[in-house]
Image 1 (cartoon, rainbow, N blue to C red):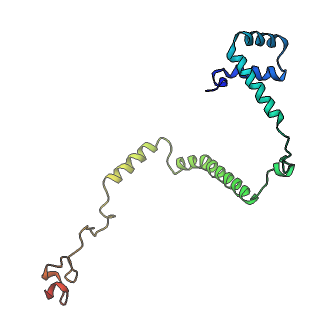
Image 2: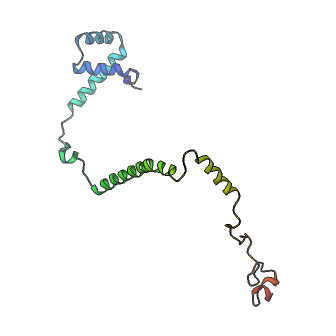
Length: 172
């Protein structure tokens, strides 16, 4: 653990501002008074001064190229304008369909020949017709889950009675 780790971040910021000459005279006097009494804070100031000196002694290196952005790099490109148009058209179509449904769909339900007073009675009639199906309208044939027996079909290979002649089960 270094000396800088034991000092609060706000104190390090004040020490850095003190070294850069950014503190006003009142704040600088308060910090100097603290530096006279606090040994850890004065050691941190010495370490910061050494860091500034080492960094200042490094040679200045020119970058290999300019990393500044030009207007062409910043301007957004429109790669697929047809997709933007089709998305807008789909959204507009969706809004039109929903609006037409809300506008005309509710009115169509009430204008089917029944007034609002007759709707409860029509619902009762519909429920009665669904509960008791009309035998004249129902299909005459019955649906079975089990297929009818077929002598040519092999149901059980070990049963000779159901196997056609020449099959494997009849040869055994």
